[in-house]
Image 1 (cartoon, helix red, strand yellow):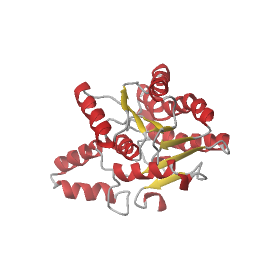
Image 2 (cartoon, rainbow, N blue to C red):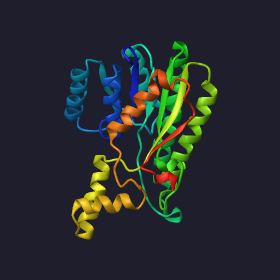
Image 3 (cartoon, rainbow, N blue to C red):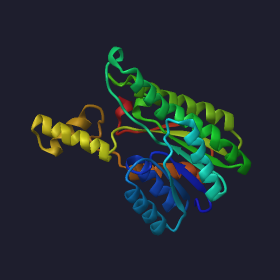
Image 4 (tube, one colour):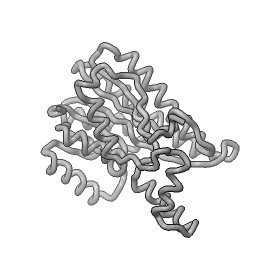
Length: 260
């Protein structure tokens, strides 16, 4: 379905971003991976996706907090694949603290990577999409783009901003063959979340399975994790013909979290 299309997925060397990149590659898209990690491990990942799905794959190590590096990332995609057709803004970081104790540098970093990087990616990718009369922008927001939790002021502010940015871009591109939507996951079983589970289990002296249930029960009524693969398949759907008139939406994949 996406053969001949080029997709940038930020923060895609692990977790949600990797799941989305693999799904887009399975659908035929050429992929620009982005993210940090050991060079040898990233090259193995790049080569593996390329071989498994028979698509072109490159990696660009842009720091998503730096606009000049985001510009280089988009330029690298255009140079290698002739343009940018799909942009998935997934890169993100987290820091938790009460508002009056929140470190200013951490606030700035969360806003830069979780929100401003999406703005820069979109403004740079849109001319390529407009030139082709087709484009798909998928912003990975969060359940925290729709509701809040304590001690997460920067993350919640950034993700609410992503939802608003999604709506504006959708309105500005309506009728141009370009769509912009947000996916709002709840708890997703990624390596980062697994570390939280393991830490909770160790701290409370409970089995990992019990730690999982405790973590999920606080917010997610389904008591089941979403997987990166499920989010990847939703991203593919948003890039497909069935979603051609779906734009400006924020789609929760949260086991009922935001239905409460």
